[in-house]
Image (cartoon, rainbow, N blue to C red; front, side, top):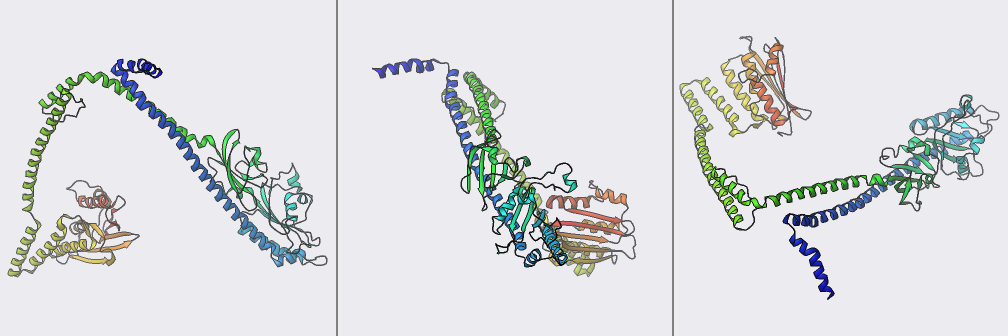
Length: 603
């Protein structure tokens, strides 16, 4: 009974109102349930997924960064320890520091050795700012530079207490900046010092009962901060001692203060770890890594900045979803209004076919009689278009066949056979010059035609050039003097066909000024700096500057420089804009053409 009443209530409140709705309203309801709901779920899911993944990746990156900085810090501290060990184990230094100078001036030799030794250490270790030995030997004079007496300030300093308790081991102590009062620095009362790390070591050389001083090495804090300066972007990085004192960081005002004054909400337990905390009133993610002496590298990243990209992406996603929803509403509204106009569309399709416009688009019109008629109209128009295209393609194929027949009539083999016949006639008539000219001409066209290929090897290009020059030598008897300087290793590399011939032709036809001595042409080829370098040099009359300028800019097919520009363009189109032709000429001296081509071949 209750179930029956519930079904009737559900039908009266939901089903009947939906059935009685106008079609447009039904579309809007379905749109909201089918598109907006899943879209909203996808947006929320994507936001949570991106937040989780970005947090994981950021943690991994911070962990890697802190581990790397810790490793670099350990290496740097080990390097300082090795420097101190070299001084700690120096027997000569120990003897000079522990010797009695009461009735002797041998301390002069001691200072010579100490000065040289300590200055060499400072020169070879630029990140060390000072080396000092606080000696207990009262007979050794002090210079207040490398050798000092332990005054009250030194005796009360943390590094002194650490060194006394270390039994000769290395200790590192963070020291704050020393800022003397007005006049103290000028009077020598107190020395100004920046924030630094002091390496202190008791000089006992395994004799704990008889220490002869304390060795200190000052390391400026900026040299420690340099280990993490490049990584200090979008995050805060600190190096802290075991008790949480900040040794190094970007903000120098925080040095020698406790980290927990700034970072709250977590504890440092174990060698490595992480926790969520508060930094400057903002939620942060903290990752730390500890080295052997207890110092920690701490990385702090703002949680809001961590999620900033996720929020931007979610905002964009929400904007796209809203735009898609608005667009969907508009499209549904238009579809509902145009639903009754299918007959008008069908009439428009018929009119387009009547005007011989067969590009009829497929229109979704349903499966009723109107829809079937529209489908048949579209199929008929498509079939008529295919038949027309088929007839058109046949006509094109017929024209192409006629063109091929015409081209076959000028087949290169016909030219070779004709030249061979002329050569035979020349042999019969005993005219050797005609035979040689025809032979060279046949070789020239055999390589230049080359089955339509535009790229040939340098060796083939040189053969083509030699055939051309042989014809010109027969024509200009005794006026052309040739020299070849060709590196055989360059011959296999590809070049543009008919690349040298235009420059040689220009030299022969435009550069000969003495009909008795003629002209000398030098053709060079070599490999230089990973490029193929070709040169054509002549000792002809050369060119005036204005003539050379016109040739370099010639674009007209009738201009003398057109062939040169054509070669340069073909090289640039084939191998790249950085390659091509360079021309140098001086009037009365001659002309030099240089061509550069890459060894790797065409693009």
